[in-house]
Image 1 (tube, rainbow, N blue to C red):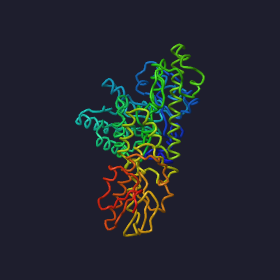
Image 2 (image 1 turned 60 degrees about the horizontal axis):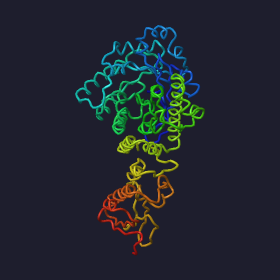
Image 3 (image 1 turned 90 degrees about the vertical axis):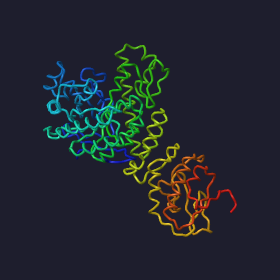
Image 4 (image 1 turned 180 degrees about the vertical axis):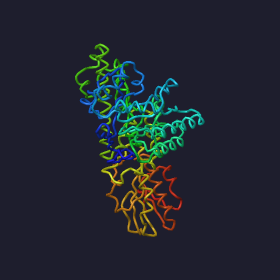
Amino acid sequence: MTNFEVRQYDAAGRLGELTVPRAGVTVETPTILPVVNPHVQTVAPATLASEFGAEILITNSYILHGSDDLREPVLEQGLHDLLGFDGAIMTDSGSFQLAEYGDIDVTTEEILEFQHEIGSDIGTPVDIPTPPDVDRERATEELKTTQERLEHAATVDTGEMLVSAPVQGATYPDLRERAAADAVSTGLDVFPLGAVVPLMNEYRYADLADVVAACKRGLGEVGPVHLFGAGHPMMFAMAAALGCDLFDSAAYALYARDDRYLTVQGTELLDELSYFPCHCPVCTDHTPAELDAMDADQREELLARHNLHVTYGEIRTVKQAIRSGNLMELVDSRARGHPAMLDGFRALLDHAEQLERTDPVSKDAFFYTSHESARRPEVRRHQDRLERLPVEGDEVLLTEGSSSAQYDESWGVLPPFGPYPRELADTYPLTAEVPDRTDRAAYEAAATGVRRLVELHPDVSFTLVHDDWPATALDRVPERVRLRDLHARD
């Protein structure tokens, strides 16, 4: 757990560096691990590195272990030479096959030793992937088995190979949180969140947000968090904002095989496109009709390359958003691409208090881009910290407008943050860009801030001068606050 260093935060999103000692490389996170099928390589691993900048990929050691064609070659050559890839390679253990077929013929110790023998840089034990919505008794029992296997994995001599500790628990937040804390206690290195693919396949992004948030509560800030099977770029920003660092994707190849074209907003069928809404080399050099007319293998490879360009492009966009401090604005923007993503964003904001713990206290700007912005961690922090700000007078004016000499003190009010001392007006986040036609949610959040300030100072008389605040917002203001309309005569 000493191999991961966080360089910068935004919400719970992290720019980090994962040192992989066996590979002799340091991987910048967040990043994607393209899934490479050892039998079918739609895009060669060497091309993943040279064309897309892949620093790490993932393949399945269980497939290699059981392959008549590949088992001996990989033992003789090593995994890196077999795949032709110089970066870091993570290997899965067969847990996916266990989930699909109900049984596998290998133990945790056997598969870890095999992963070490073939030169894997990050190995994975055999955990039990408990699917969503099973009964609690099953989830608890399988979680117990997984933890026993993780504890055993920690005793296996794997040399410099990092070992992951998958976090299970189905859709029970308390089980996920406990499983995450138990995974940390093993001293293992990487923390994949398992059995979440069914949630993504069913577009249950709100449930996914709750699962990830629960896991993060148990994990804290140790180690890189790997969202197993998260291959669609439409959800990278949301998952990163919740604290995920690694994603793995077979989608680029699987979708290409079915003539499906990835975009950040969703997936399109090739034969339904007249134009390519993308500027990658594939899309600038070809038209949809040209690709459609190609033979199947050529079309599949070009679609896979496009899908990879979109995938890596979104990873870079997420990284830059964390660097610039506008990851939440990016999540908001991406949420508009699909109703289920909007559900996920709103569920993410249910965990604003959790996200606020690592969110920087100062950034370049806050942009109010939708009514969901009123629930962001920055708003919560401002209102929580009102207790640190002294009120000097007995009669205080709260107003969106100018101050007044007839009051002992005058505070500004800025939706969605609420009241603030005027000397802080030029400090973050009160320099926020808020539209003139502010929505009800912003006013209601500001009223919550007013209530908070009033409750902190029960002996002070407050007057709120407001500009057409909706009744739903004014209902949140305590009765002992005098209300005046900004345009009314005093």
